[in-house]
Amino acid sequence: MTHDTDSVIRTDDLEVTYTGNREITALNGVGVDFAENRLTAIIGPSGCGKSTLLKSLNRLHEIQPNAEITGDVYLEDEPVYDTDEPLPEIRRRVGYVPQKPTPLPVSIYNNVAYGPKIHGDHSREELDEIVETQLRKVNLWDEVKDRLDAPGAELSTGQIQRLCLARSLAAEPDVLLCDEVTSALDPISAEQVEETLADLKEEYTIIMVTHSMEQAKRLADDVIFLYLGDVVETNDARSFFENPQNERTREFVKGHTAVEYDDGEDDVSEGDGSADEVNGDDADGSRSTEETESIPAER
Ligand SMILES: Nc1ncnc2c1ncn2[C@@H]1O[C@H](COP(=O)(O)OP(=O)(O)OP(=O)(O)O)[C@@H](O)[C@H]1O
Image (cartoon, rainbow, N blue to C red; front, side, top):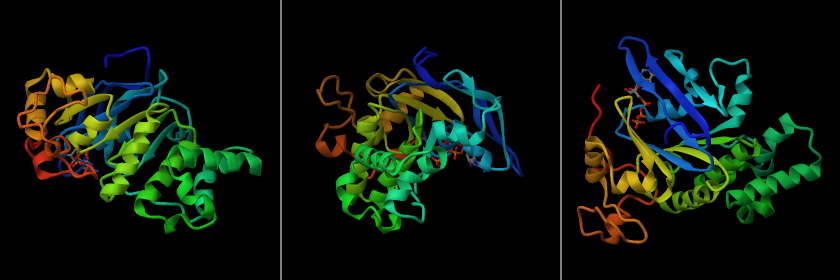
């Protein structure tokens, strides 16, 4: 994960400071690459800067009035900060899916068609096709095809999360930012969203913050481990989990989970590698004390 030519988005010496009574440098000159059509998980203890990094990628952190930034982010080699490109266009190209999904107060159909209707001149047939295509991509079509005119808010939380994913995809983003997108869901819904992300990463560059090491292991192609605003280690997921290079990464990985890939080779598990351990977290990917608190970030 050095600055490869196939990186879609990268940060260059990105520093984010929150000013106020207590000044906090949340990101300490971070330079990382995110490769095309791969899912990168950003992990690390609470308060280490994961959300700040994710939201910096499409300038969402600017919603915080006390956030100051230096450095830049490059999307397809064009600066995201030092640019005249309109912010809505940057946020279209780098879509954001929040932890708690909120449907627009319109029908299921229009939740997906909303962006294309605003930004393009589409016929009804074209919109129908966009809606069906995006709902199929998030594995929701079969569940809602007979009630597309019903309010989006009538769906279950898990269905709403997939609807919000479909809405983001309808904007034809280059990159999709996913902020703990399963942590507010029940286990079955979380599993469905995970399956959807596993499908989507074939076609999209996805960057995901997760508190769940097991979720990162199940889904990620690459991993970034942050600690106190610094990147401690980045690597492809298999190398990261099986052969961490940095002592702090080793502690973090060891302290969290059994590590065992499907082929069962090179198990560096500390435990017996039982199914419970290997799938050790809640299926919703929610954080557990064991997972997240073993190395608290101190500021
Ligand atoms: N608006 C803000 N004002 C002041 N400090 C902030 C603000 N937002 C975040 N911080 C601080 O910046 C640091 C990084 O926060 P951030 O939310 O990016 O971490 P995180 O790794 O995503 O945390 P968590 O895992 O708990 O969600 C923390 O110390 C946090 O308290």
